[in-house]
Length: 249
Image (cartoon, one colour):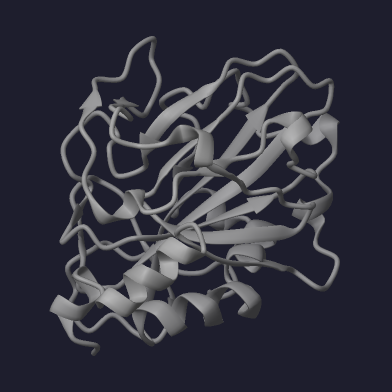
């Protein structure tokens, strides 16, 4: 197992690298056709709505019982990159669809670790992937990041109007320097949940859809009734309820 303090407190060179690259690793594309990447409008996830409201999406145990989603979230192009960051034993603990329709509201600035409630993970070690199911460009409100924001915990106002994330205090950041993370369909970006991200009000007539996948290691406890799934290596600790992959009887 990799050194725990090193995982929770990345080295200065790692932080510097993330800062230079806007807290994200280079985008990658799933090279082969996949059913979910070509999600049709008449098969949208059931909880699509204006601005990522609370209760949109589910934990890993429910949607991953569906083989197409399981195969996407556990594809080598994804898992190998998470292994390179967190080590050989990897647990997928959450996956969420995000769909924004034309004329949707903005997604306010927030850190994903601030979800309006108690901490979800102990210790708080998480690496996320956001994959585009549509072309997500500036014209249809792609996600944007603030460089260096992962180096500190930002104060947040409590969530309002049923939204999942709180509103971050951005007074100490230059939002004009935020980087638009444009992604073509099938591309994904890797980031940690201390990064400030947001999306502009949605004025395009093009749908904006993606899927988020959240990974940690089995030595992390999930502090809510959520089942995880081991997607690489093994569970050496037994802290969490683990769901069996759909390909295993």
